[in-house]
Image 1 (cartoon, each protein chain N blue to C red):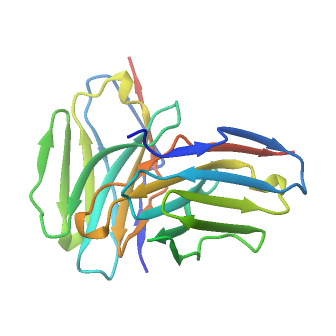
Image 2 (tube, each protein chain N blue to C red; image 1 turned 30 degrees about the horizontal axis):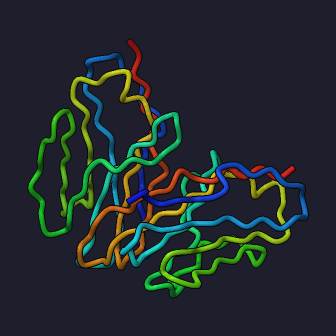
Length: 115
Length: 112
């Protein structure tokens, strides 16, 4: 398996533009997580899905952020409109069902810069 | 609510010294899982160890060891005989009800 795949690896956009980050979880994993990492706030859990259903989106900072998981093999995190304070590294991770208690496998991350 | 606290922001040691990283967690769940991850300067997050809430046996794996004490909600991690390649940010994480929550991380700097 290729692991969790995120795209793009780097994104530079202007303030006000829409940004879409993409994630392909490991096949067979039914939990998917989106995290944001900044120097100031560390690694924040934004939202997580179980069986394609959003379970907890309490970490989503505001309405400008939205996430979808239309099927088991794809998820998006969208920011519209983007702001400079959204600049961060965004990680996607996936894991097997809770009962097996495996670790979360992380993608390489998307480094977002909003200018 | 669940929470993971890593009180140490940064630890600096000289090579071959031992390093112990502290982690305190909060959860109302009776079944949960604890993890340590490493994030080297290259940025990827690497899984190191896992422990479930029913198993308080402490173990050693190579130069890594961990001390899980349910009574104090602590899950400390030790690197024995540190090496320069151990320089990284180390994260403690809690999986409770399927939600992976990470601590703020501890920066470990190992100098030759």
